[in-house]
Image 1 (cartoon, rainbow, N blue to C red):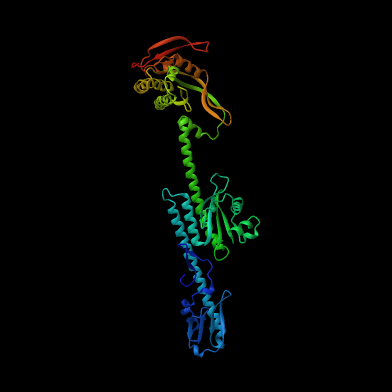
Image 2: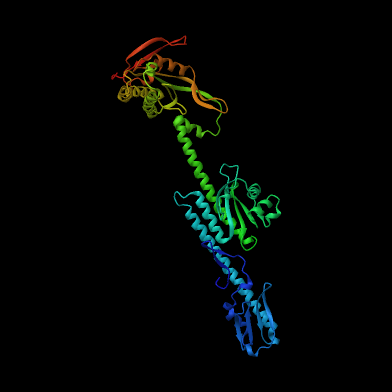
Length: 494
């Protein structure tokens, strides 16, 4: 590399490689030893294009007249020597210089390859920096690319929404015009998924106006592909020193592959954050178990299945009169305090909170997956909910001026339809059926502090709970012809 002048240059704070070595810029002084070896003791004089004497031996004895020394069609020096040997000397000198040129090119290519590999490794390490803005990472990609293929401007577009290209980062621009919402050249590369090269933008109908306005001389757009997926396009404008070479395009492809990799990682990370945020938000509207079940389904469809479900309803007693004596803002705070504690107990006992309507809570067990002893879990939740009312909810409401507050609970078990109800555009995962209606009717019968449980559940919880307060026989529920029996529980603290 030291044998070539002009191969390395300093630009923009970094080195760039000129991929084509100019023979007429060879530093011939570095080849003096090789030239003297082939010329031997023959008197001669070799002077380069800059007037520097490269090699001389008994120049005063050389015959008048010179020959041009050429390498790859370029004149690099003038040779003087005996007329009889002059032509042979010219051939020998040109052969030596051609060999040295190939050696320099080989060294240049090796160094370029090593520099490129080192820069890409550094870039990948740079991408691991925590909290690095993605735009800055892309700018660093393009800055390093410009040290290998010197262009005036470079920009990267991404398909962040999967459909349209948008400017993500640019270097070399005097303003933020790289953020243009439309780039015909980038669009062409994206639609064809092939490298798009334009050596004369003014001759292209879709580019001629922009070429004149922006001073475009040439450009390259390369699609950023991750496998078969198009992620974006990288655009390079105005190659310094001439058109883009094959060597340039190989380097651009290497950087495009790295950029596609970084873009894929960024999109994946972004989608994961959105996914986690959405899941977290859904978990505040739906039961976590329902959210998990929905995620596991490949396709959501209307309809459901009939299965055994245990349902619990709870309702605040005297709610209507309470709302008359308290502000809406205060009531919302108290209700939220109540729901927070009741929901925690339901989840602790593996229940699914189906809905909250006004002051009413509906929770179910044995969905979406079957559970062992769902009746016992529901009744344990019901008892804990009533005890929590005594421990925290009633005192909190008392402190805010609500002197009398309580809760009634109803629990029933039976077959119900479980699934997605609604339309193809809006679905509600819920349960419906006579067993659910019966649970709500039992809750309506319960006085403050009571839990009314259908007697059919008793054999499944007998000996595993505290004893019921009393037994209610042949209860006639609103809207039903048949009567049922119920057992009434009430924590001793009431």
